[in-house]
Amino acid sequence: MNPSTHPGKVLDLQEAVGRYVKPGMTLHLAAGIGGPSAAVCEIIRQFRDNDPGFTLIQSTVTGHSLNLVHARLVKKLICSVCANISASGRPSRVIQNAIEEKQVAMENWTLNSLQQRLMAGAFGVPFMPTRSIVGSSIAEENGETFKNIEDPFGSGAAVGLAGALVPDISIIHGCVADSEGNTIAAAPYGEDLWGALASSGGAVVTVEKIVPTEFIQRYAALVKIPAYAVNAVVAAPLGLHPFSLANPGIVGMQPYEKDVDFLDTLYEASAGDDTLDAWIHEWVLRCENHSQYLDKLGEKRIADLKRKSGKVKTAPPPAPPALIKADQEFKPKEMMLIAMAREILTSVTRKGHKAVLAGAGLAATAAFLAYFRSVQNGRAGFELATGNGQIGYTPVAGQSILAGEANVRTSKMLTDTTVMQGVIVGGANNRCLSVLGAGEMDRFGNINSTTASDGKFLVGSGGVNDALNAREAILCLKQSKDRFVDRLAYVTGRGGNVTTVVSNMGIFRKADSKGELHLEACFPETRGRSIEEKVHEIRNHCGWELKTAPAVEEIPRPSPEELQLLRWLSP
Image (tube, rainbow, N blue to C red; front, side):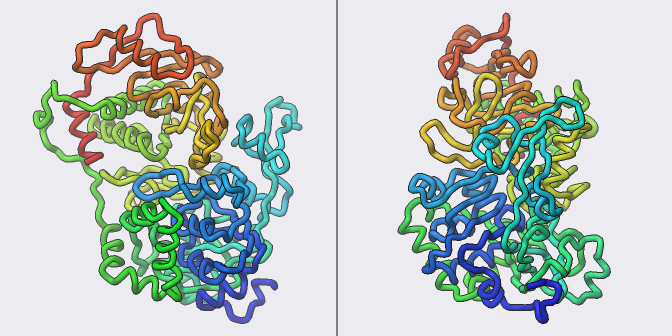
C-alpha cells in the first residue's frame, strides 16, 4: 500500500501494530537508545504465542527490545549493540543465552555502518562506501554484505562497501506529528532517520502527541520524516519510557529523563528466565494497552521523570582546594581517571583537537574531568561530543551520557550518527580525539568489545569502531591478563590511531601506528614500593611480553583540585 494514499493515518497503537506488523517481517525500530518502547510492548502482546520469526534491525537492542528476544519473537538481529543499559552498559544474559542456544542469528555492525546500509536503501543504491569496519572481524563475518575495494579513481586507498538494507516496516517514536504523519523527531537524531525512509512498507510513527498541520508548518525545519513515508500515526505519551526524550526546540512538549530505577529492576529480573517472565507478565502482558502501562507507572513517577529533566548540575563547586589535603589517600581508579584527563588535555594542546568524542563509562568521566579542568584554567579548548550527535555539551555531574536528556539542552549542535561518526569524528578533515573504553585490547591497541575468548557475547561495537577513525584515540581500561591479551578473539576495531592507553596501573604509548604499546609510566602510591617492583606487577597483569621505555617514570600524585573535581563529578 502506498503510504501517501492511506485514507486514515491516525490509529490507536493496537490497531496500527495489528494492521502493519506481520509474521516473518524485517522490522526496523528506532528512537534513541531504547527504541519505540510503547510499540515494542504492543508487539510482545500481539505476537507472544505466534512464533513470528522477525528479523530485527535496531542500532542498540536494550530495554523492552531485549524482551522481544527473550519472548522468542526474533530469529535474527542486525544491530551494533545488545546490552542492558541503565546508568551504565552491561552485557545482556538474554542475548548471550539466545546466541549460545542458537535461538537468534547475530549480524554485527557499527552505529555508522548500519546507518549507511539503511541510507543506501533509502537512496535506492546497492551500497554505500564507508571508512568503518575495514580490517575488522565485523568485515570478515559479513562477507555477503560488505566488500573491500581499491579506490577506482586511483588513490590506492582501500574503501569499504556496505550493502543496502531495506526493512519491511519501520517503527519510530517522535516528538510530535500531524495527522498525515509529518514528524518531528527528538534530537539528537542518532540512528533515527534513515530506516523510515528506506522501508519498503513505510513507517508506523508513535509520538508524544498529535498536533495540527499549522504547528508542523511553524517548525518545518525540524520535520525529519515526511507524510508520504508514513502509514500510521499513533499518540503514545511517554512512548520511549524507560528511556529519555529530549525536546528539539518546540513549544508545549515536556521532555523526560531516563528511568534508571525501572531499568535496574529490569536488569535484576533478567538474571533468570522465570524472573524475567514474571516481570514481562507484570509490566507488559497485564497492561492491556499503553494507557494501562502509564497508569501502572503512576502520575508521581511520570512527573518525577519530567521534573528531573529540568534539573542540571553543570557548574563545578567553588569550594577551596584546602578541603582536600595534598597528601590525601586516593584510589587506583581515581588515579586512572586523573591520569586519563591529563592525557586528554596534553593531546588537545599539542595536536590541536577541537572535538573530544567521549565513550561511555570511565572514558566519559575522564573526558568530563578534562573538560572542567580546562574550564577552570580559562576556557575549554575543545568541544565534547557523543556518537549519537551531541556536540558542545556541558557535562552533568553524577550522570551518564547514555541516553540522558540533561546534556542535550546544553549542546551547541545536535545532529545524527552519520554526520557525527562519519564526518566530524572520521571525516578527512576531522580534528577529533576519541576517548574510549574496551573489553579487551592487544599490544597494538586493537580492541574487542564483541566476543570474549570463551565465546560469550559482550556488547558489540556500538560506535567504538567508527570512533577509531578519529585523528587520534586514547583508551582506558582496567588491567588484567584477561583484558590485556596476546591475541584477540574478535577484532571490533583496529588500533592504528590509538596512541595511548591508560590502565589502573600505568600509562602505555606507541611510537607509531603499527608499533607496540610500551609501558612509559606507572602510578604513585603510598606503600613505598620501588618503580622496579611496580613494573614487575604491571608485567604480571599483562597477557603479552610487555616492553618498557628505557626509563619508566612515576607520574605525579593527584592534586587537591583534581581530586575535588573528580569526586564532585562522581559522587
